[in-house]
Amino acid sequence: PPLVMAMSSAPHAPNGKVVVLGAGVIGASIAYHLAERDVAATVVDRAGIAKAASGKAGGFLALDWNDGSAVGPLSRLSFKLHAELAEKLQLDSYRRMSCRAVAVEASGKPASKKLQDVEWVDLGVHGSRLMGDTSTIAQVHPRQLTEALMASAQCRGATFKVAKVEEVLTEANPAGGLKVVGVKMEGGDVIPADTVVVAMGPWSQTAAKGLTLPPIFGQKYHSVLMQNSRELSEAVFFQGLGDPEVYPRPKGEVYVTGFPDAPITVTEAPGEEEVRLEVGDRLVAAVRLASSELQQATVETTQACHLPVSQDGVPLIGPIPGVSGAFIASGHSCWGILNAPATGLAMSQLLIDGRYSNPTP
Image (cartoon, rainbow, N blue to C red; front, side):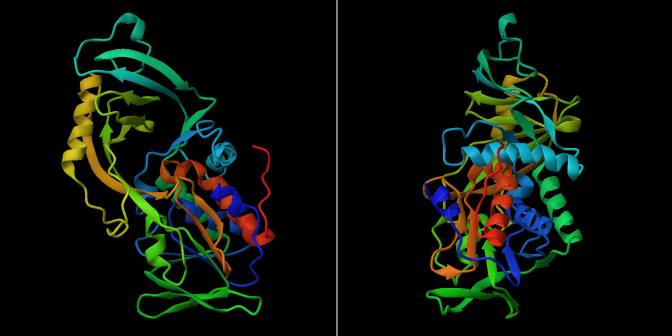
């Protein structure tokens, strides 16, 4: 798989300036893990820190749901790293929880006694199964995680710059091919660099015109934040009513998402995604058909973001062929928050050691 091939080797180690393009959770994690090794990166983003999907995603974490896939080992390691980061960075949004698949219909009938083991779904239920408990399921607010990673990196010397990237500058490499020499910003400013990591999700191609990158598409998801009267602790993946997903958060917040658009080449600017309120209304209507408790919850926010998706669904992590000092970490789809810590660790090893060494999860 592309991810495994990309990680296999990196014939380059930084001896000068490292620039990370993108201040989402992937870019922040890379900057954090570089700073842990005393490499201070410059992080550049046109919108700010966690302004796109990394501020609006659900933050659902699963230990073993990617087992058997190319990212299985990455996910298992990352799940472990999340717990360590939550303690080290004092993330109060991190917690363990349970998760169920619940089959529902729009009947509005109260669930039978044998189906009343679901924490908050009680209408139209005709089946449920446990998908994970506190040993395999967790959550974190992605914005809090991203901001904390960046803040820690900055305390160790990393810098952050709000700017729009126009081009990664390259020149002929005496060893063959090209080599990175800097990053050009809108307006003409140039940041000298010998290492650049492109971590801009579905904006990676347009922001890195000096590089030849595989396409990264964006799949728009809408989400609704509701406020419940009590704190819930069980995530639910519905089967029926359009298959929405619900991730309760601490302090009574409830995150509802679903009804994704088809992946496209993104033209909307990060942080300026169009929100179609009718999609949010569908999400709210669906969960209220299944929960008498959430019929009383208030709707606080409707939002939208683009999840970055590669051509084959496998994230691109590693060196960009033909350009010494150019790397990519993008295309993590719905598992970007989960896999961010291990991706940052892997990229720091590639940049500093020239290879990826996988610790035992």
